[in-house]
Length: 66
Image 1 (spheres, rainbow, N blue to C red):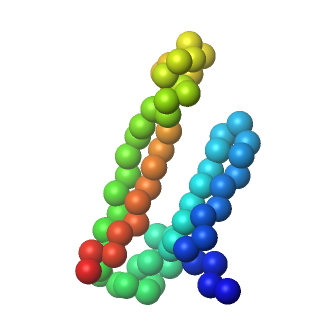
Image 2: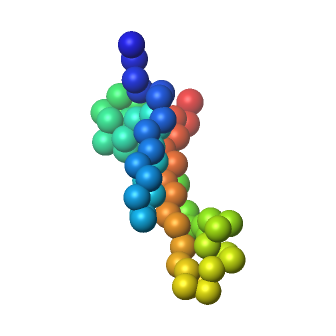
C-alpha cells in the first residue's frame, strides 16, 4: 500500500499532523515546480482560552505548481 497520501496525526499537548510529501521530498520529485507557503492561525479552541490567547499555530503547505 502507498502511504504517501495517508494523514498522520500526533495528539500531544502540541499537536502535529502531516499528509503527502515533505518539502525535501517534493523538491527532489518535482524540482522547480514546488511552491511552499507558510502561515499562522489561531485554532478555534485557543480563542476561548485566556492562557492561549496570545498563541498561534503554524501551517506549511507544499504545492506542486503544475
